Image 1 (cartoon, rainbow, N blue to C red):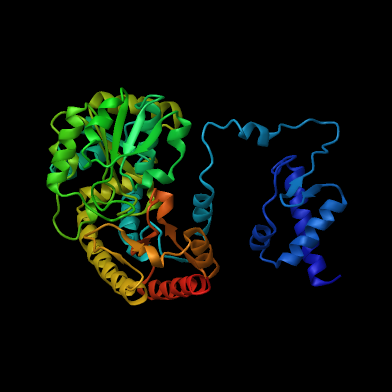
Image 2: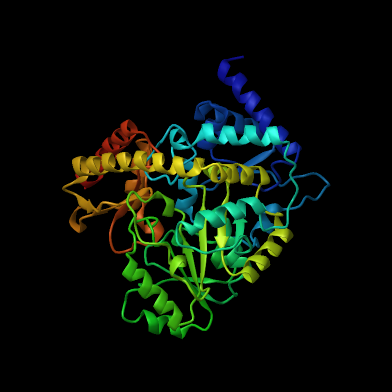
Length: 468
C-alpha cells in the first residue's frame, strides 16, 4: 500500500467515525477539500482519494458546484435534520467576508495587518501569573454569584473610573463578557423590537448582525449634520451607539466640544446613548473625558473592557448605568450564563487593587506609540503616493484611504493579499461605501512582520492595478 493510499484510508475512516458517532449528521455539508487538507495536514489529492472511498460506499454524496454532503440514507432510523432547524436560528450567520476574516485571523501562518488584538508579547503574562498565584494562595472559592459580577472587582472599578471623571457606585456597574457581551445584553434586555440603533456612518457596528435578529434596525447617522436632530426626533423608540475615543475602525477621537454637542443633541431628542470606550485607556496623551463623565441625566450606558488592554482571553468588561438597569441586566444574565468567569474576574480585580494595571497601561502605551509611528512610516514608504491616512493618538488602528483614481477593487484586493499571506480588513465591512479604505492595526504584528506584510500588500496592489 502506498503512503498516499494509507493516508487516504485513515482519513476516510476518521470521517466515517464522525458520521457514525453522529458528530456529522445526515445532509450536513462537509468542510471543503482545502479545509480538510489543512485539518489532516495532507495534500488535496489525498483528501480527494479519501472522499472517493466514502462516495463509493454511499456514505457521502457530492453535488457539483456545491460540495460534499453526508448521505441522507440512514437506514430505518430517522435523524434530526439540524440543517433544517438552523434555518430558523434566532441569530443569523455573519456576513460571508466577515466569516472568512474570522477564519483567517486564527491562521498563525498569515500576517495580520488588521487584527484588533494585543500581540502576545504586549499582554502582561507575568502579572496574570502573579494574580493566579495569589488566588491559589488565598484558597478562593468560586460560586455563580448574582449576575452582577464580583463585588470587589466592581468596587475596584468604581475607584478606577473616578480617575476618568465617572462617578459610579458598585451598584451601577455590571461585569460583562467583554464589550460585545455588554452590547448583546443591551440588545436583548433594554432595546425594543422595532427600535432603531443609530451609529456613526463608518462603524464597527456595521460588521455585526445580531441586532437584526432581535428586530432592531441599525442606521448610520452623521451626528454633526444639520438634520441629525430632526432624524432622531422622528423615531419613537431609538438609541445611539458611539465609539468616541480611538474609534474602531478609523482611530479618530471626538474632541470635548463635539462630545458636549452630542450629549446636548441626545438630551433634546430624549435619546439614550451607548458609549463604547474600550480603547479609552490607550490614549498616548491626555485627551477628552468619556461622554459618561459629562452625563448628569443618566442617559449614557458606558462600556469598557480589559480585552484590549490586558488579554482578550479573559473576556471581562463592564457596563455602567443606572442601578435599576444594571439589576435588570444582571437578572437576564442569571437566566442565561450566570455571569462572567469568576476566575477571570479575580485576575482583573488583582491587577486593579495592586496598581499593576496602571503600571502595565503606562508601559503598553509606550510600546503602542512606537508601533504606531513605525506603521505610519511604512504606509508612507509603500503607499504614500496611492492614498492618505491621519495620525492617531492612541488605540489600535490607522485608517488608510486610497485616492479615487488609484483605488483597487477591494474584494479582489483582499483576496489577493490573502493569497500572499496577509489579512486585511476592507473599509466596506464597516460601512465605508464612498471610498476604498483599509483598517490597519499596529497592535498585533511585530515591526518586522508589519514591513514584510506591507511589502506583500504593495505587490498584490501592483499585480491588480498595473495588470488592468
